[in-house]
Length: 309
Image (cartoon, rainbow, N blue to C red; front, side):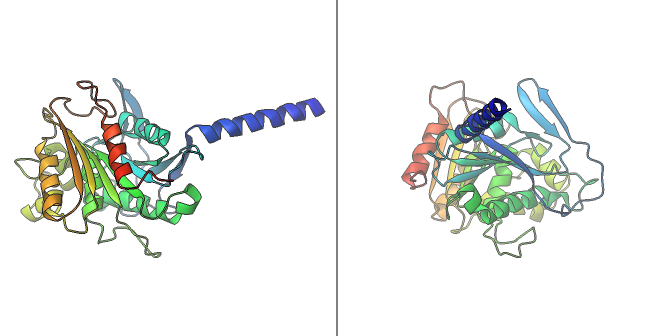
């Protein structure tokens, strides 16, 4: 019996050590009670592999997955990651968990957001659903900052493709709270990281599928302008780091260029990297170049003092 207890203690200590040194994950429901802006509906969420891409469809119960870096490497900087998917699915693997684990390697706490997919049958107002989830995630992280080791002024948001639209919406529409905010938590991200992002909903530049899924197929010009985030930049917009490929035939590179120029006009610090090739949706690794955009991002974060312990 004594030997068994000793073995149990040894195994427990070993597992605790492993958890402390690897990506400890905790999946949290985004809302404690009822989900705002939702209609009663069955949970029909599905998860599958589409080739090499992990796809989550019909999301109606949003979650936040916490990835903590090893304590001895933690910098106090955190990033909320919004995977892409055209507001039709959530590409939760190569634009979610893979990114979070890579950020952990450099001491950055990561949170992957599984946000609701806009749907008239499951939502009262589908156009604000994803933004509500992004704001709630920011609110939740700030409320638990001490628990997760997030320092003040060090919470950024990262988005890929349509997740980049969501991230840039959070970075340009933060003055209005779309969730209850009794604690008056700051809903403005401190910086943005945008990878081949949908920015504009204009006919000439925008990604039509994302626009149709979020605001419908016959939106007013006022609604198109409201969600064309290059038109919503102000001097209060957080600094941004952008990456795009010039040959992206899904989301035009002009999205990133227009957003960068709007940031410049408003005196907001920004850095833009355009690779000649790479297409769309490459995630961590653009196979056409040996250059790693993550290295460029780490340089940018370091220059801003965001990797200092």
